[in-house]
Image (cartoon, rainbow, N blue to C red; front, side, top):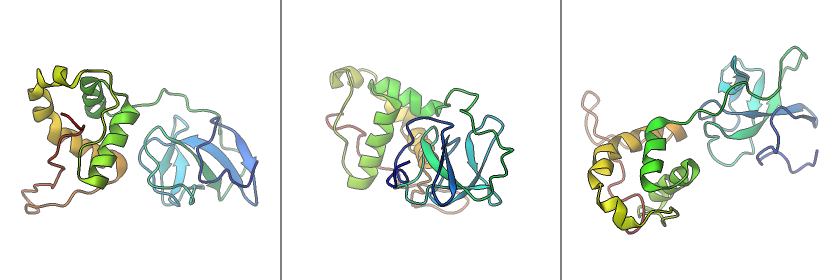
Length: 183
């Protein structure tokens, strides 16, 4: 293993490597922060757990998203844990998937676009295949789904929008601009 592997995505799941500590490539079942203790669930996907036998790659840049592969450092490797590839197909958030389908982009593209909007407070460049005029025909879809999309996206990436309301009646400061430029 090259010394530069930590902080990068593994090329293959279930590949066990060794540095001064054992590491294994795994897939996240949910959002995980770098350095967070983890275990593997019944499907052999990593999940946060304060008493975990592994630590999510502390050099990973940003939150490790659901379905993303990453290196997990093993704190306690007694040899009894099955580190083979996960037993289930990746699961995607259906609200976000529906929005991606509506815009004619991939799941990853819409996740990146949302991050761009949050980081820059302006619409992201449109990478999709649809003519933006096609999207205007069904503008009610996005207007109806916008709040749910931002709520679900925030959960997926562990991002907390500011609450402009009260504790009992929250009103979150979701982005007000369009998701994509020209929309």
